[in-house]
Length: 304
Image (cartoon, rainbow, N blue to C red; front, side, top):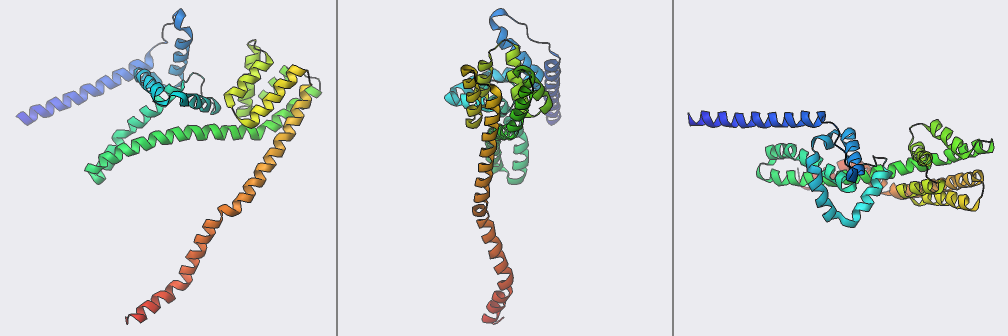
């Protein structure tokens, strides 16, 4: 009788918890935008943008604020690098670095029960420690994934930028203004990252920012040496009055030369990188050829 009451109470608690989770999720997804106050206008707009963008943020928003405070204390100066990677990876400008790190931590913690189930069923007691280790590894992997996404997007931008600069040169030499040429080039490249970044430059200029300021924002957003050199040349030509078409043509040629140099460097490193696999293949071949003779000699030697 006592066991039945305990089981009933446990089932009731589980059902109530599941009901609270479902209610919370539905309420979070159905919630309207936050009310806007004058003193917090930008922050509330940013939060509303994130709530529309990310369902996980919308459902678990109360957890992001305390985790964000902990991340600000734990990471400190490294948050600037995280912010740069967020922008370079093409993610929403609404994300603060501490909040994005909190998102990664929440995703890792949500994986923890699955890790416990899998590891405990295989290793019992030590499985819990293994699950904790896998959760930490998941956090590190998500952090590394952000860095790789930023690097990959920068590579894509640098690969296509010479062609965009060539198109800008042709359009401006044909008589188009810089704004019209940039607008047509952005539409021509569609959803490619290079078009998105120059589209942000165009949007900044449409919002009233000076051309120098718009390109400087792009330089700080991507924070890459090659791109910074190109944008710096554009800004300098704007200040000195040099025709932009000449700058675009020169920078496109420079990018092609650098790409050829990178290709030559990778080709030269390929031989060194293939050395270890070649040695392993050679050792495996020797074992396959000489293995039967060695085994036969050992067996004969021991009188078998």
